[in-house]
Length: 311
Ligand SMILES: NC(=O)c1ccc[n+]([C@@H]2O[C@H](COP(=O)([O-])OP(=O)(O)OC[C@H]3O[C@@H](n4cnc5c(N)ncnc54)[C@H](OP(=O)(O)O)[C@@H]3O)[C@@H](O)[C@H]2O)c1
Image (cartoon, rainbow, N blue to C red; front, side, top):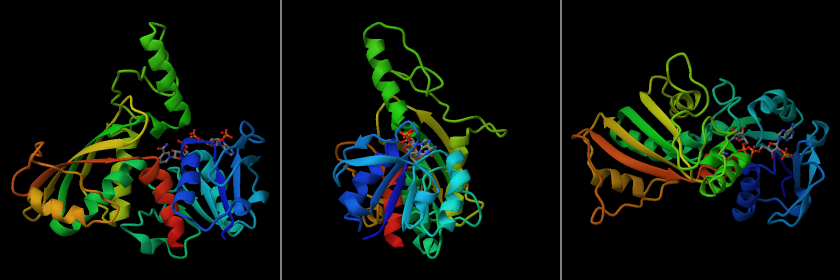
């Protein structure tokens, strides 16, 4: 059994990590699993598939002796603590963006670059939108050579955390009851709305979320010049991000060939019935496709546990 710590265990990603460790039969038991939170959550008991567990107040001292620590807190928290935890011996898998583009920290999607996790003490889990896109894009890139990729995302509220999902629930009720609709976690009211801004705008006109998808994909593919443009939009759903993707390829590509490749690609489930729906092609060297994935799973908890399984 491994001694496993989850910091941020009450959050959207933390609670999903608990379910995923149990579902995938990760070698951990009630006795070797330790949950941590802030002063807000410390002392509360949460129901887990391993039985009820108390949330302890996080401290660096409590990290010593653990084999694997999953961080599901903010980037600032990770910057402050991740390397210190790793120095105490545990392998740290961080869900925040703090280290994703740092040279000496591998950014891992187990279906794509598992070898880079070997021997690492601190590993970054990619942005949820990147992970969902990359598992489908990479096999197409390997087989047809992607020259350009244009992505439009439809991102669920859970991508912004547990409180953001609650804002959707409460404000939708307010909207339907004719009460005042307010917003805190989102830049605008979220019920029945689309918000084409996730995170802050950068000097180049893209938002930080959009640039994460471009820069992280380049790092994971090991191709610093990979051409990818992303438009990220928040939508009023609870979970699962969707992405509409157009690629221009070096080699000729057809929907049939793409289907054959995707069908046997790890981490991808092909759901496609052209007899009932239409799927447009984009010239002889291009393809439009639509990917959908639960970003709390492949975009966070599942990918993190798959990384831990590599160790
Ligand atoms: N949501 C997603 O789809 C997603 C996907 C990929 C990556 N991420 C990243 O994963 C991280 C967690 O996101 P989330 O959506 O799960 O956020 P969340 O629902 O807001 O949860 C954050 C957790 O962090 C804990 N926390 C805050 N300050 C702490 C401290 N000083 N010490 C210990 N614990 C502390 C909180 O514990 P208390 O409850 O005890 O206050 C809470 O459980 C973020 O960096 C996010 O960007 C999220």
